[in-house]
Image (cartoon, rainbow, N blue to C red; front, side, top):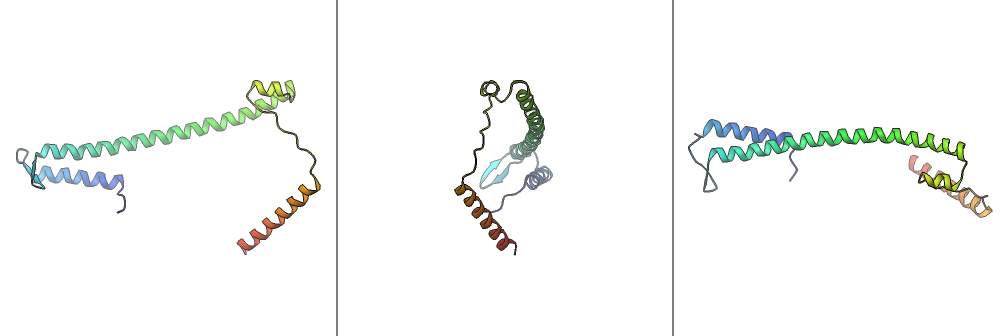
Length: 137
C-alpha cells in the first residue's frame, strides 16, 4: 500500500474533524467498532495528528536550513584551510613537524614510474576508451 503524504493526511484529518463537529452533538457518543467514544476524544486524536505533522514540517525545514548553513560554512573553511596551508608552506616550509602541528600529513612524494607501471596505465587507459566507446555508441 503506498504511503500517503502529509498534506493528504492533514486534509483527511481536518475533514474528519469538520464532519464530526457538523454531524455529532458534543454530548452524543460516537459508536466506532461497537465502542462508544466521545466526540471530543476523537477530535483530540485527529487534532494531535495534525499537530504532529506540523511539527515534522517545522523540524524538516529547520534541518534543511541547518544543513545549508553547515555546507556554506564548510565551503568557507575549506577555502581558508587551503590558503592557510599555503601560508604555512611559505613560512615554515614543507616540514613534517609544521604540518603535524596543524593535524596535516606531509604529502607523499611521487617516485619515478617504472616501465611496468607505465604499461599498466596505458592498458587501463585503452580499456577505458574502448568501454566508453561501446557504452556511447
